[in-house]
Image (cartoon, rainbow, N blue to C red; front, side, top):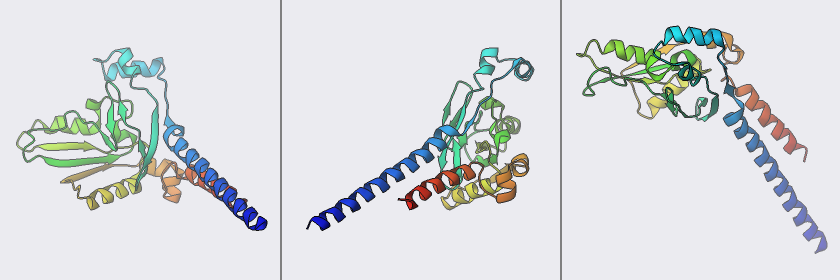
Length: 220
């Protein structure tokens, strides 16, 4: 009986330790995906001067307010996305960046057009109404006979393969645009993971964390 109790106790402690290690691995992953991946820039005087020329209607305080910390969080199928942003000039929710104006003409019979790409398409450090999709909507408004509803799905670090996965998952969910526009190039060439391995930008780090956790479990 004593030996049986000892065996049950050892098994229970082993299971408890395994669960603790799994919890620790999950904490590492979530902590990395939500807080460790950041885009942080502090504009110097030269950049402030450039922004003054591009956006003469914005104050220096407005310009500095667009240089906040970008954090990434987990997103199914595409690995990650921006955390939601809610700043005076920058708004995102889920994978979607606000477009201003969202409609180029009346909402009736508007053709849905989805824009995909990396940080250039999303408009990092650019107001909602100055992104490329917003510029398209403003130009399209000159022809009210053909209306568009514009969606900006650009995400920092995204590249073509990642965007293709996003589009495919959206189509499976019944979210099918009339037109899809892709703007890619730099991320496909400059990011080693995308150009060589074909993986999302942060995948090697996530894989390293998971392998470390599995290795710790095997050595119990």
